[in-house]
Image 1: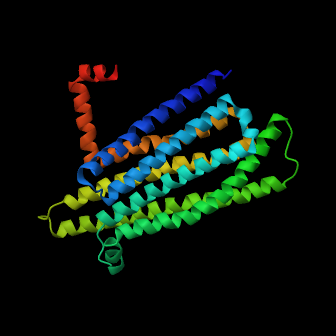
Image 2 (image 1 turned 120 degrees about the horizontal axis):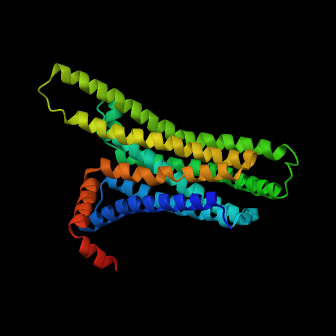
Image 3 (image 1 turned 180 degrees about the horizontal axis):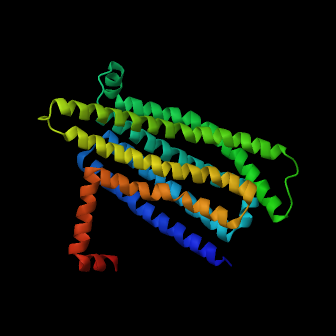
Length: 312
């Protein structure tokens, strides 16, 4: 029987899962309806839809992994099952991270204003830039899969050793694990650095724009608001991404070194924060999604009886 802490962990994980499914599912639904009406989607909507779908998959993987961790931990001793779970986990996490990175780059090129010819050339080819980023991430995905297969094998051995209350038979596995962990860390660091660069260049563009406004105060200040909105979205992504990557990096270290039940539950639960909460920040930062959300809330508030009858 699960303990009280494990029941609390499952309840919190299910809560984060439902919140994430609600937010990301709303993004997919709105964009799909818009696609049916207009027969096309903008580049930003395509990135948002891909991001939401990958995060829905990521939340399902985290939920299944959480139930395995609490209810059937002995299944971690099955090497093939661990590899399957790890493969789905790394695929959904990789796609979600890179779609969010592409969104940060897209906002940068759409909002920022630089006179450099290279920036102008890339700005007119923003779709190609995003496509190159996604295709380039596939090579990193291959390296990620190489790492995760090695890590899943070592985690399986780690669980078997933990059950038998023994220690590592040699330092070879730990050394190999640390080498793979360095590769894994580097791969997850790349999208963070790309998004951080986008944020810093957005700040620089905003400073240049504010300085220009001082010499021409009669001009409209719409660009400043666009800069601030884009910066908030990118900053929220970076903040939540730091929490997410920290939880990812801690998972391997906790399973290998600490092998403490509470520590394992905490780091797995932390991994749900990013895909669950960031979707609502994206909804608030997108005018179309925000208007649809407000319209839905107004409908639910004005027609509670009709909603109850539909639910029943």
